[in-house]
Length: 193
Image (cartoon, rainbow, N blue to C red; front, side, top):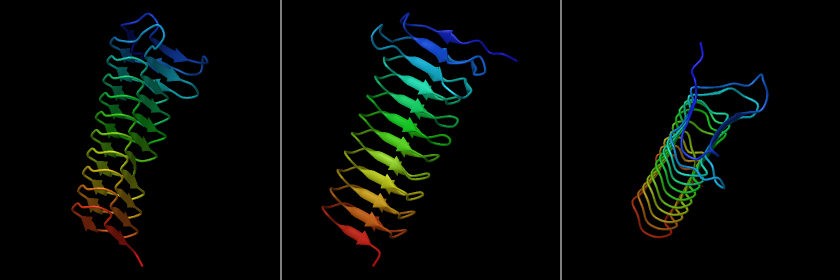
């Protein structure tokens, strides 16, 4: 069974596969793109199917399945499993991840190597925690901490601390201390001894 692909928008937008063995099926580029900054769906060593880039420019999916980029500029889903979502924003990236991660928007937010992780918005937030979440903020890090949560703030970090939470504030840290909680403030630290 074969599903055709649909490409709209700029004539430079493309669905690309590099050899006859690879296959792209049911992919959609709805619009957007520029000759100098096209939207691309790429298979370079794997099967890609049912990816969608709705619009924007310079957005790319590479070797993923059933993933969506809604719009924005320079967003990327690469070498990741099924059902990744980037709503929009600028240069957000989901990389080497398993299933169903979401970056809603923002600027240069990053998810890597996990499943079911979430970043809502903000600037340069990084989430490498299974089922972890960052709501927004700037330079927040949720790292190796399953089900951990950072609400917002700046330079807050949860590291190796499953089920820990930092609601907001600045430069707060939870390190190797599961089920811990910081509500806000500045430079609060919870760590294992």
